[in-house]
Image 1 (spheres, helix red, strand yellow):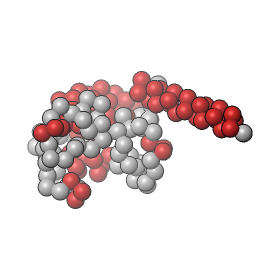
Image 2: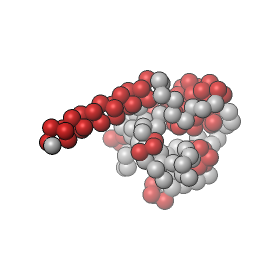
Image 3: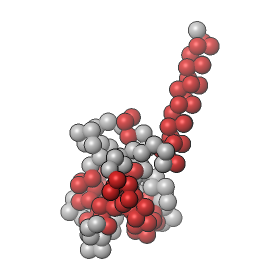
Image 4: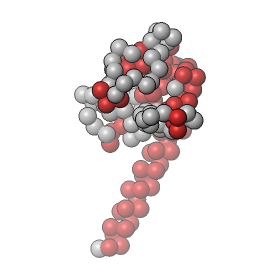
Length: 141
């Protein structure tokens, strides 16, 4: 019995690691169903690296180079929770532009990019964030 449990644990771990590696390499297209969205992801990544990576980190896990100087650690943007089974793109846009302030953040520390990022750049950035979600099906609403 113990041997079967160990075998099952190893198999499940291998599958999870394989899915993670595939998602990171782009082999699994999480949230990239339309052709236009796929074309926006590289531009979104470039925007992310220019405007967001210093705080959220190059892999968007909340560990950017300026994190030690901040009062609160930036969010891990690879684990944005779905709403009604969907990536909350419009909500994320409103956070980026400053239209929505999250109470959990307290006073606004994140720069508001609404005066800098306009459409279609804003949509490209959000498409990129959607594309880097880790195991989105494991984190339901």
